[in-house]
Length: 280
Image (tube, rainbow, N blue to C red):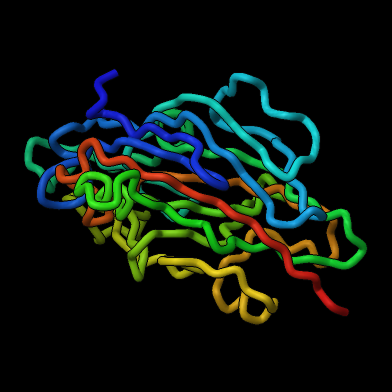
């Protein structure tokens, strides 16, 4: 596949997804290359504490070699699938079918298939101590450019998103938080009442994410109050000993950095987990 049409994800540091993104013209969404893709290759998840373990559950990718079956402190995944630009809140995604006019669509479709649209993997996070624990994203968690001064890398980073999703109840997943490298808010497409239109299509609108948004440089907090205030919760193990969590990454088409200048951009996603004991 053409290198300029890929976002190649690789393992660097604690947990890393790396890539090359092809994008569009002077407004959000890919326009020059409507079939631009991201190719996921690997990730590694590492916990900061010996009593905090990670067990691989599933992914929308096929890994080779097969991931370890037991609970570990470091989980490495190697795969290779393609995704493209979509827009959503981490659970529900949409993508315009563009017309010949750059900012006009012939339709906006719900994105229901994960393969080819976003990268995700699910793990069980568990504790083996007696005291309850809450687990958070900590220092070292980031989405960073492969080359610090490369314009394409910087644009690709700015358009990326990472959702942390509690999937203990598969039929009712809950987004704990969304990480974005530099944006103060996250805007996305969603359905709307008749009479509301976006890109010329009735029944859709753009909204601002109202959940917990995490941005910039994260810190490993020392108290639960400070960690909760930072909005970086991954799993609440206060009374339970384990929780299933999905990490889902995509390129947000509504981000103003998803433009031609990001073509061939390379980014890394680093995931670092830490836990704090819940004192009764």
